[in-house]
Amino acid sequence: MQTPKIPSFFKSKKPDQFYFEPRYYDARKEKMKERYDRIAKEVSNEQSDKTDTEVFRSNLRESWAANRRQKTGFNYRVLFYIVILTGLAYYYLFR
Image 1 (spheres, rainbow, N blue to C red):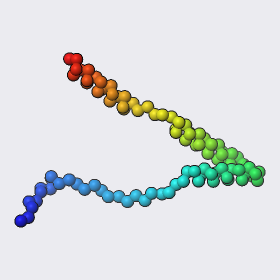
Image 2 (cartoon, rainbow, N blue to C red):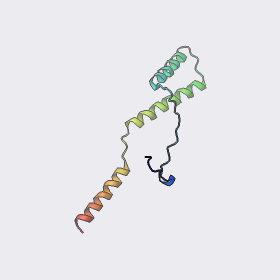
Image 3 (tube, helix red, strand yellow):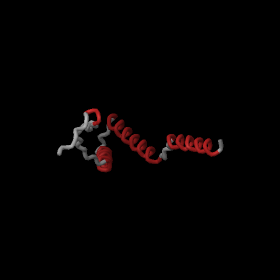
Image 4 (cartoon, rainbow, N blue to C red):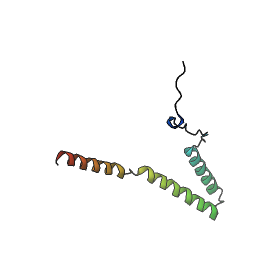
C-alpha cells in the first residue's frame, strides 16, 4: 500500500544550497609583520611620505579596534522589550 501524495501547495520549498569556502586570516601574524616591516624601514632610514601615511593608518586602525573592544554596547532593543513587558504586566495586574 502506498502513502497518499501530498498536494504541492502543502510542500515546503527546500532552502537554496550554497558553497562557502572560508579563508584563513591571522590578525596577530599580520600585525607582527607590519611592525617588523616598520622597524626594518626605520633602521634602514628609508622612510618616505608614503610609509608615514601607512604607519599612521595602521596605528589608527589599531586604536579603533582597541576602542571597539573596550566599549560595552548597550542594547536598546532589550530595554524596549523590558519596558513593553513591564507595561503589559502592570496593565494586566492593576486594571
